[in-house]
Length: 343
Image 1: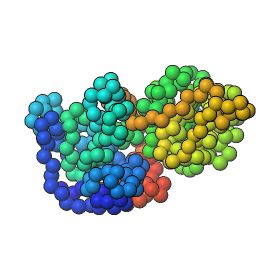
Image 2: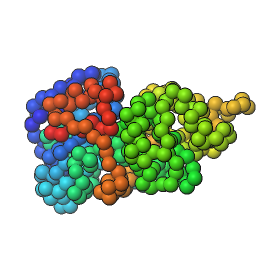
Image 3: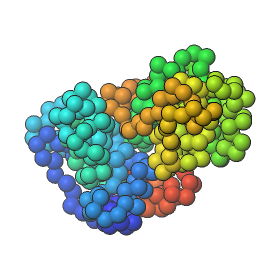
């Protein structure tokens, strides 16, 4: 079969490899779609020794059960499923309470991260990683496993603050951000303010449920005109970019007692310090969190939203032969919504 493999730092190659065989408790999936994620670029750019090589990339996967392994009775050939990519240790406090994204023994482990992923014609995964998708298109189901799950989890963390009459600022209307806007529109009654550098991205945000759109230049003044001056402000800020400019914007517009959720992996920093400065670097009583992926239960809920037609991923599809080009365009910021590779 064909697979797109990480063969060394910065090296991504399409090659022929043997079709994998499922072991006990595993399932072989005929891959229908795999999302291309910015996290894959971080894996590609990592120094030698951080990730195993060679390894097939791709952790946003949906497909059809091809062959169940020994002991698997819940899944039959032809069943359609999305794959929950995280694999925790299974016995720490986080895993035992269903929060494998908080595993205390495996920092970042899973399909396409520490074992072969979905940029291939087939992938073998533990049966416990599968969730049914029903009649949902596989090109829609695949991005939900990260691009949908991660913003859903972030919204869940801030949900007590997302009350009717409040404001939520969404920074970065890309693969995750445009889904965050939809999740907020579908599950809350907040006023959503979308921020991006691209007019096309802001048009997409408006189309999928944002109440206000703001270009990144002079965004702080525009947002303050909507949410009021300090100590008032945005009740929740979801930063899907994570560079210094966006973390600075977030702390500038968040309200006293508000919530900052830093999702993007752009390398920016947010400094928290108790101080008598006026204004303080971060307003008093603000909660800052770094969400990571989400739980299997949350993924089931995201899939339910999509099956109800309340969440739809903007996708651009590529054949497996063009996966490397898809990542080049992703790095260049030339993908609207989510790039999805279809073997």
